[in-house]
Length: 299
Image (cartoon, rainbow, N blue to C red; front, top):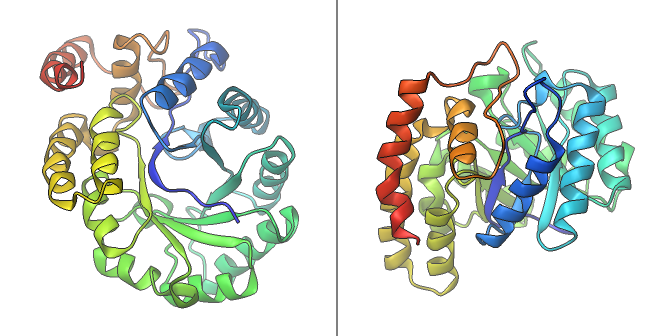
């Protein structure tokens, strides 16, 4: 079954000035990322403002990304939802439009017992059938719910199409535990951009990076060095990726990504879906100025 690897961009969702989905900018973003060497696309996750979109908007974004990518890179759609019913509906939609697979964040806000989490993923897995790959997605600092390694093991045993997990908390001990799931045959991806090389060395398959949206170049450089077997060079290049991650605030404000994408000419606006807001002008100008030396590295 297909899995994700390398530099996986957690894509932003571009909006028009009236707040509707900017389909053309979304297509531009897909092509920009592919041209820059990103390995996989992962729209509609946290970075994509998923909980602020309607079901139909999420389907539009998913369909646009899949069609524009046109099998040039692997595309997994994030389908996690506040309700199991919607998560299953979105997962089936992703399968039917030709996505390579889906990811789904844990249930959110409401504290969930382990058996609730297990049933949630079993329901999604059953909805799409045994041959369509699914990633678990744990971001406990946002969702309020965690996937324990033993829970991941039980889900993987019950659902052959659960191929891995995206883990977005900076805990390498937990990453190592996930790497033992299903006897080590479990695709582990990290969310924290700074852990890319450390995770690869440990056996993880890649990073789901928001920073790689506006600035894919440093992460692609790291992975190319890794693929070439030059671990020392990959580590050196990771230092640049860390600097860029710090500059772009580590994903704590998606408005940063949208504004930098706008200034790079990829999207038309940096409009956010309220209650999220755009950057203040002086803040945006300062970030853009600080980013210039890094952009110059890759010209």
